[in-house]
Length: 332
Image (cartoon, rainbow, N blue to C red):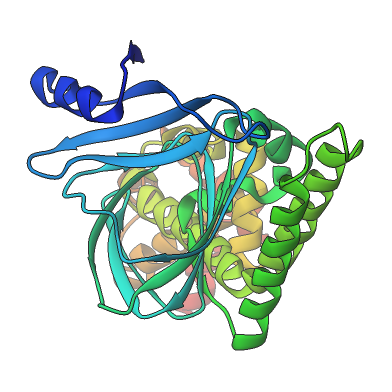
């Protein structure tokens, strides 16, 4: 990231426009109250042709920034990538945006948790659109991730939003107000400030996780369905060449043991090897039933087995009988 020092933000915006910079930071000397650092950071996220730059202002000393009500979108026509966690609650109205190129819509009481480095592009909003925002600085982001969001952290990456009821939204706002009250202090007058902040963020997360449970359950179910469907497609395509679970796990970029665990969850307890065997045996039975004159050797060859003996052992392991016995039973 390139750093420029200027006397004011206006001069810096001219510099951004002139040099067509994608992402940069300006530090501006400011005359502020003694309780606030004299250094302020401006994160400029991409030049817009006329409105210059989308900007989020964060005091350098702060690890939490709370905005109780923001009206409308920033005047930006391009993507934004934030280095921090943003907890967002729609207070009224509605809006649409692109989140990693996927369109999302928020309405009153929609909660969103925007994780770092994701691409967000505001599209449009209603005239009455307003939202509450809590910004968690990179200074404590890793601690939040490690100690609070660890076990379900990735779910926020996949889908950032979930609808809340009126009571749930009121509770989230109350927690945000409490987090803000703690954040206003420094360690000189509140010795346990950081620990209190982390504990309240942990409390907020537990509420958010609870409110998201239906959406998170749907995400897990979708993932499992994708695993099952992809595996089935690959087996149907390659069963004649390979009937080994490790082969299919590798094609899907999974560790074999982890893949087997996922597949059992998706299939209701059926192991992937068992599924392959059932599919291959079903194909074998269909071939033998469709043409009783077909020999076992011909069936084995058509299914991709190197020898008749190899096919017979495979069939016996899966069904408990040899293919010849199956043929005789069904012909009789």
